[in-house]
Image (tube, rainbow, N blue to C red; front, side, top):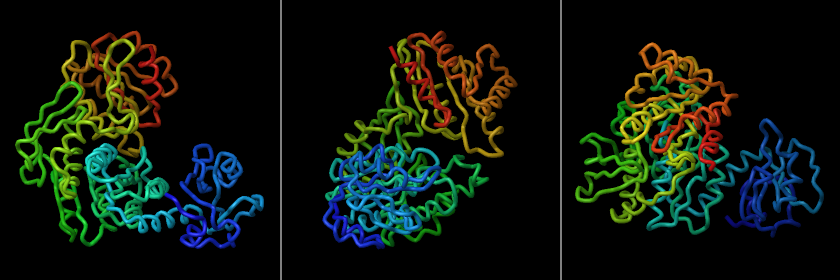
Length: 460
């Protein structure tokens, strides 16, 4: 972005006179005073801590202006440009909507219980072959992250791919209306955040909020194999496109072949073309199909789609292969976990050939509420002792899986359990167990911090 402070003040209705600062140029926005670029507008958000106490630090680190909540006494000096507003977060959102309308790119909004980050990455990669694209950084997918994504667009942006997360009803309604997407994509309905929703039906209702801001001539792209989405899509008036594994879908995969670190597949739309994605897990084929469906609507050629998928750059810690220090292959998926995703990746590990052992390191899946014990225990059905020889469990909820494994006669000596404060012991035990040629899966919610285990296992 690049805007004069006077334009920003007008866009958000700043309450103070900024005549002396009107020509200050803003080139980015930031809400973390430690991580900002020179030329940034600082947004002092109020959460566990009040961002106003970091305004001076923001200016010292390169910010050239700041928002300021009107219910706070102004403590900055006269030579520090401030814009006084009722609510800095609401003003951030208002400014992002103004800037979005100013740049006027095509908007692709992506959500889903699983796969939304991967689908976002794939979609952006495909569209970038022929268009100027901005995409959500990392997982900036909430009421703060989405506005930051929009304000990070260059003026030349033709398409912005926006990932949208949710953990409560109404959240996607707000985000969808904020960005007014041309394409709304739902990857799938799983059990993520079931603590807050209670049932998959209610999760589906909340995910469908992504179409609330969909333009009248927009397109709704969704997993056609999910009955909950099919039922609700019947009420969507905009154009609908489905993807999945059924012949009734608009885009479906054929000839799926899984290799050690990649998957080849064909698509009904171009039966003679073979596509490759540099990841494992057949569930990722659906993510690719969703991205392909978007690309087709925007006239991306099959040749460009093939190249983009083969070379896609994925967000870190999303089911990525890493070489371990002892020669083992590690499938790291430590950013998030829920029952659907965990079962999918366990199935993937069991299907992969290896000359060594298969070892699963599984941490607690968070935000499962009253169903947590049952859902953790349910993973036992997806762990075959003939295919996964060692299981390392981390967290109090994983005791339920340990008990379920013991009940189904999984060898007790191959089940290891640790508290979340025993990661050092876990690392030591793994290092004593792992040999070259082993396959190791790391899967947990981010709060368990298995990324620390990954760092130790890959340090030579």
